[in-house]
Length: 491
Ligand code: ADP
Image 1 (cartoon, rainbow, N blue to C red):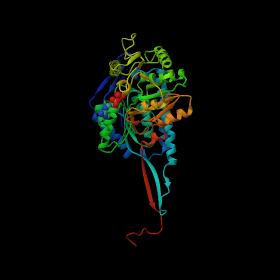
Image 2 (cartoon, rainbow, N blue to C red; image 1 turned 120 degrees about the vertical axis):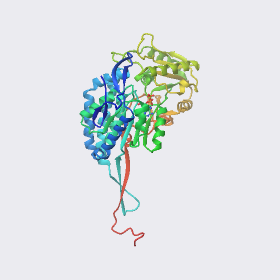
Image 3 (spheres, rainbow, N blue to C red; image 1 turned 30 degrees about the horizontal axis):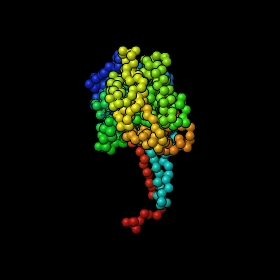
């Protein structure tokens, strides 16, 4: 399998013919060749998106017309769900049932924004009462232009959908750059867009590196908005680049999301939600439950149950039946996670379970599910995002202390609270400084609900109606409707 770029409705070789091998993280073997576009390809893609926006009439289509394309894309994703899910496993390493879930969600996202595109027709052009009845004011929401969407490797197709679906629903055109190590399902999305007969230039996909294709997109003067999911370091860089010509920007960045477990919580349920929160997708999740705070009376019991269940997890190739933890996405990520665990040891923490490559694997980027305890509050392992299957657990005594420790982070993406006491659940969820708070659960994500972080976890919200607003400008149209002249200068 050898991919191409998708620019202006056509498949194209990169201008300089660049390519890289795509590695299966479970076997470390190359199984495909990915086209690597550079600045020139990015420029062609942006110009195609610009023309589709400025001249070819995509922004002037009605929401109902755009919804037809979005629904076609959703249907085509569902028709090919099994093949796309398997491709995602080969590329990313995640277990197949998780990949099926992601691809189903990606299809659902296109359907959801089809509905919102239709509703936009009815809700647009609303009249606004103003303080002078000689004027009539209407408020229109209009597509904001050409979007540069840059996405990471942890949920390749799903993150593409979170950006492409609302952008197209709004009437924007898009240049999408997936992460270079997991681009194959984005290329499939291009094939689906072509099959859905999406007009040329409306969606362009440039595979390539962040430093060349990505950098060319984020600095391109003809791009109006940048939508990014990835690391804080690159997010900050993108925001700085966007500032130079006031591009709109939305960022979904990292986290170090706490879960606060009170003594009245159901211990078995809490252990299940911790594991779901930190081992799903090998912990390579921006909202992963990576800091767990347990009230002291149940600390030992909970830790014992968490350790016992963690040791039972089936690790293996994501294609194999019954596997719950696949390999990490790349050698580099494996090295990063290993280094974080070594640093935790050096800083005096206890690695209670896991901590390295499982002994039974000599190939593949496998990393054991890992539980760490006895770390200090100022340790690196407690404060920095690891993006791997590594959970830190600490005891606490009072509600006040738990909230203070949970909030003592530069991140604020998600948080969870486990208790049977509803007033306490309400108090703590109000006090937690995070964009998403889960009560007696962790990680459920709904296309209808806003997703995004406080503090350094991001800027703006994706999903729901907020996700659509990311791609809309607001225009007031004010008309003078009085029969009397205005009469200030000319009486
Ligand atoms: P991760 O840690 O998940 O790899 P990154 O933030 O490094 O996150 O990458 C997320 C996405 O950002 C990838 O698609 C990557 O290629 C892209 N990227 C990296 N550097 C740049 C850059 N300078 N300009 C635009 N995109 C970039």
